[in-house]
Image (tube, rainbow, N blue to C red; front, top):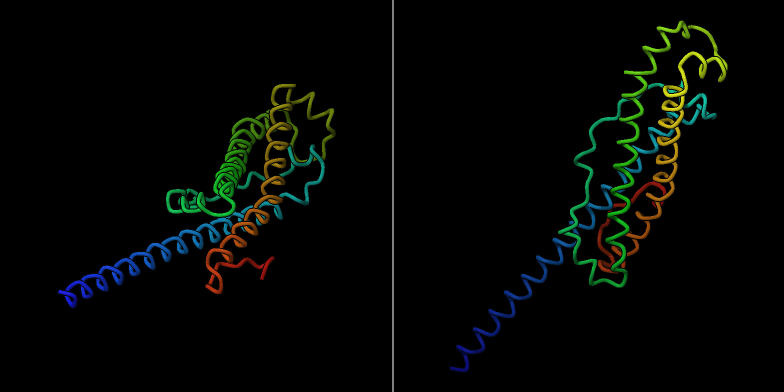
Length: 199
């Protein structure tokens, strides 16, 4: 009986340890995936920033900045269910920070889409119609030729893109660093997704 009991006990313990290892590995995979998502989001933001940074004034951003169409980033999203174990960590607010960062990234992409559609569908045809192409124009000429509604819409759209872009560009590396620090705390000595600014 003792042998049967010990055999059952050790089998149970072995199975329990196997399940714990499996759960821990799944947690590490989910955390690594989020580190990878953050790095890709930051790379996307940085690439777009490099394209728009040469346009330094609000006027240039509104009327000279090309209407770049960003690719779909629908797959760049965190698995919040898989990351729910962070709620039991020493920094449970990190999960909320990741959610905020995800929304901020999506706002950047959406603001680019809205600005580009408005620029292509409304501003460019109006510029052609008013004969305002092919030469440098002053702010006053643009405002007078386009009218207050189109001029203001172009300025607002470009400003929204720039503000969202700058905010995301600053916050993404910070959140990546926080999550990487948590990963090192939870999975010491194990391989985690690094990013070139921290390598």
